[in-house]
Image 1 (cartoon, each protein chain N blue to C red):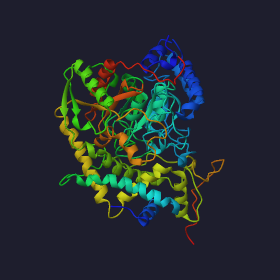
Image 2 (cartoon, rainbow over the protein chains, first blue to last red; image 1 turned 90 degrees about the vertical axis):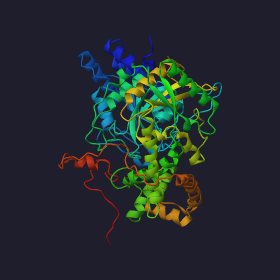
Image 3 (cartoon, each protein chain N blue to C red; image 1 turned 180 degrees about the vertical axis):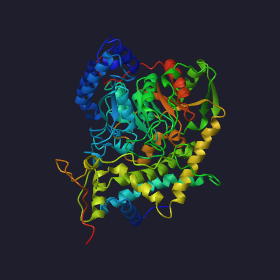
Amino acid sequence: MTAPTDFTIAEARTALAKRELSATELTQAHLLTIEALNPRLNAYITVTPEVALQQAKAADAALAKGEAGPLTGIPLAIKDLFCTAGTRTTAASKILGNFVPPYESTVTANLLRDGAVFLGKANLDEFAMGSSNATSAFGGVENPWKRTGDDTVLVPGGSSGGSAAAVAARLALGATATDTGGSIRQPAAFCGIAGIKPTYGRVSRFGTVAFASSLDQAGPMARTVEDCAILLGSMAGFDPKDSTSAQMAVPDFAAACARGVKGLRIGIPKEYRVPGMPAEIEALWQQGIAMLKDAGAEPVEISLPHTQYALPTYYIVAPAEASSNLARYDGVRFGLREEGSDLKDLYERTRRAGFGDEVRRRILIGTYVLSAGYYDAYYLKAQKVRALIKRDFDEAWGKVDAILAPATPSAAFGQGEMQDDPVAMYLIDVFTVTANLAGIPGLTVPTGLDSKGLPLGLQILGKPFDEETVFAVGSALERAANFTATPSVRAAA
Amino acid sequence: MSLDTATVRRVASLARIRVEEDELPRLQSELNGILGWIEQLQAVNTDGVEPMAGGGTQALRLREDRVTDGGIQQQVLANAPDAGPEGAAVFFSVPKVVE
């Protein structure tokens, strides 16, 4: 029999329904794995065994009464950016190190409504600002994958690095994550799992610690595309508490996974062939195109001419919004306080001590681009280029049903590499950031291994609110790629 | 556009982040590195383009103007930095602002 920690969510649901194992046993198997591997991987900032076992007990009671919901008894990791009532929520920052929310985020409330079990709060880059999980005030996360014959500690990607490592190493069946510039899709690719950033407005932002409000969108990570569809079905939905939440019904995403791709036109954007891109990434992309063609889809070359301007646009818009959102951390009402000689001194000392280097850097950039005399040259200009980037996609949707592109320009890199130059780190998000600027859905699917044995992913981009086609294409790619490799650090089977 | 030390100091003050004198040179060079890279946007022709402000295309919703919450003073104050072990704060305190 499959080890409980190796189940997909779909398999675990069947096993629980047939009473082949109890929700308590499934949760305990994960808690044991966490106990064994988390001290090394650091995927969780906070583990909540009591909460998890209590929820598992309730799940068993519901299963016994035949009242199971879509996620009853499914153990998940929750990115430590989602407020969980009564459980510390840190955003991986010292400034929120002791913050215990008195309320529940809409995403986690929806998952609890459907019966999920929360194992704990997953590590991330501080305030989700980073691409390697290196900026966490609670320490970095180790990627459970290793280069063949080489023990170098690799990064899991970021910002949802803890979520990705936990799912890959079998420390959870699935996880919640958020994506502002690639923070779901890039770590999913680095850790050999699937992850989707839905359309902006599909999932409520209420109770999720804000980074850049016009770009932030929550989504799931899991080991299969279908599992992502199951989780998104629970997380999504209209929420009156988020003014940007879309008043739209939630379709059956899991059913869309079986649709197939016959007759679909798949856009291949020529601008995603960036200078210096490794030959392996290009080869993987060509394989993906061939797989979808074999499954009945028609590849169509398209042009997204403003692609090269997406990253600099993002690094104006995101820090500007962050500088505004993070103004709330002032040491007065919650979080860290450093005493000062007067109120301004208290603010300045608190924010100096509470925020890490990267967060302070982004707040300063954001403050500068919004300041008098520079607003038009930077912020307004970026908003206009953002409109052009979105227009590129709008025009593409006249010719294609979805787009296939690489998820990242490389496989996972070593801890300590890329840390000295902020701009070099920013370039890792070159393929993912466009979806956030345009507000469209993007799904990473693990598709192959590089020559050193590390996972690589491809990305499917879709029309706004057409996650169903994205799931259909992603599932077809998943079936064709048949990615069965597993990381070397994981639960003993 | 390149930031001088005085501008970095002014921006830090606007952002209410303390910066020590010895941190200024490194910060200045990092910020200039980022701003220099962002500069490439000036090459894009954006004449007549409407700026895109939000993340979605849907119009923001208005809600009924009515009280939907309240009476949760304990919860609001529970995370106050000076709440003490009993969570006994009854207000938020700040350093004296009136002489």
